[in-house]
Image (cartoon, rainbow, N blue to C red; front, side, top):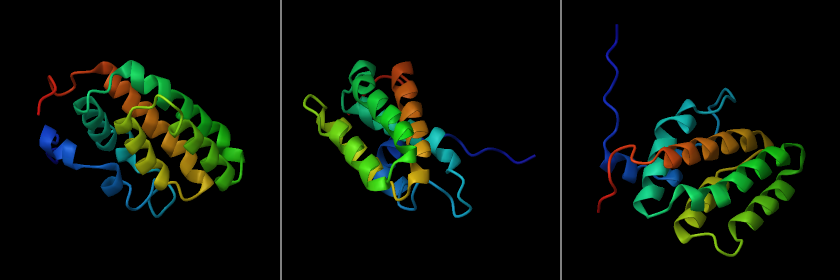
Length: 140
């Protein structure tokens, strides 16, 4: 039996940015979504957003519609789907940390097949922020 590695600490999660974890895109070379999108990477994004003071309600107001638009955009041309997603990101009232996160993850969408893993990642991040306190109180 192989021992599991310890979970990443808070500092490691804060350092694991969407730009770094999505550098190779949403899917592995075999086309399957990276499993980390629903685990470690979602935990990192949730911790970064919580650390920026973003609440679950603020996040739900943005991530929910973007995730639904991503799923709806699966049948569209990629440029059309992207334009709709960016329109939601740039809407008035979207907090800057949320906008930055979404800009980074949308920048990693390279094909229509990325839209479903994107939606799943956003849903996972939202769930983790809603759970709150995953690693204890926010700190500097």
